[in-house]
Amino acid sequence: MKALHVITGLGVGGAEQQLRLLLRHLPLECEVVTLTNPGSVADGLRADGVRVHHLRMGGNRDLGALPRLTRLIRRGRYDLVHTHLYRACVYGRIAARLAGVRATVATEHSLGEAEIEGRPLTRPTRALYLGTERLGSATVAVSHTVAGRLRAWGVPQERIHVVPNGIDAARFRFDPERRAAVRARLGIAPDAFVVGGVGRLVAGKRFDAL
Image 1 (cartoon, rainbow, N blue to C red):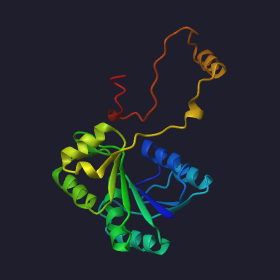
Image 2 (image 1 turned 90 degrees about the vertical axis):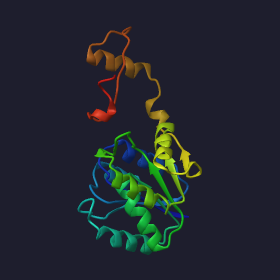
Image 3 (image 1 turned 90 degrees about the horizontal axis):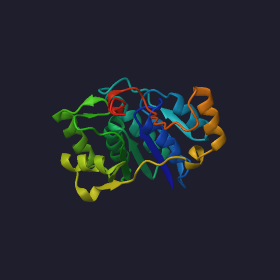
């Protein structure tokens, strides 16, 4: 079985890193196409042995990207198209249908109450998403909160499947020596209670609440 993952960009970000982790564990032959910005995650995917295509999309309204993506899907003879992030979901679902691929899955990584992936959530934005969602087979929500927002938009419950983000547990396993070394480097007492956060410095990550 051969799958193509379509993602908006491959710069550093949660969805991009999740895709890389996912591909390390899927028992499929997978390739990736990024619509824009083949950044550091693209380099990491290539280092993992994954073929990465760059569609060179000029912006949200670069309609010429649609036939280019359709041709890429048709040439690749993929059995499954899996889309990630808003723009890739919209263009990827349409292109997959035009290329004759009926098995299309989307993962919704980032859906706020008033925005989606950093852009304001307007009525046309939602209508376009819903219109193309019907072309897919299923939509994966990374949390129950995202699933609830999809239902509120009008995505049928039976099309939504919650699959929480995974992590490489071995990479973050407790290591007393590393813990002591980091505390010493930062000047933190061995018995001090520490709370930390990792993420981009943007409002949506809620570091103000932390």
